Image (cartoon, rainbow, N blue to C red):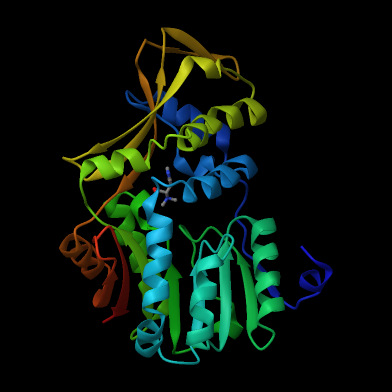
Length: 323
Ligand code: AVI
């Protein structure tokens, strides 16, 4: 970060939860018939870098498609949302997409919400430097479980922004629960601008999660690396392979780590046997038909106000309104 960004003025609000218990989550996930690790553990420093790299892979269409939808429809989006809103970005990360909206939206203030404090401060300070007229708030919180707005950000013009189709990483029931919380946060008449990945030809999906450069494979395997770094684990990473495939019946891309042989993984002294070809399930990424997502939003109290898609209907950006 440059000095100028370092000095930029950001109101910081720390609602960070207690550190989650990686060990007990791993032990819990390994005790099930289908072994699993929560995808939230992908995003350590290396995992976040690998995810950025995934977004630049030619096969991974969601990022560039969403950006082009936002670019082509920025004026239309601004007209629908209107000026002077309080814009709340959930999982703000590097905050690149929000910049596409700032010039046309003229929000009264911006609130970036993210669990990763360092990332959040870096990105919000850069925004405060680049948009000096804008009031910028940084809220460090796990927005999946707790959506609390600082008192000075309350407004009757609240608009949440949740890009990237991260909603696809929730199980559908959890997605409804989460959207309900967003609806409560923005209140009646409040809006949510959300990126939603769409159902499509399985070949496109299978290559998006199996890029030729092997970045998604590295991203998936990095979760084992993280276990090795942060826990007392004895695991031979070279004995696992990446597997990702579209599960047509369940409408989701599944990612797994496949054990190449019969082996025993030792976690904090506990022996966990795996047979050859047994998998550890690491992620689901649900894809929706427009009608399916409208039904899911309605269960959470949202009405679809407008949908923008690309010409191939790969991805959608949707404006939902409460009530
Ligand atoms: C963050 N999330 C929306 C990504 C997705 O497509 O489900 C995570 C990802 N996993 C593999 N590639 C990208």
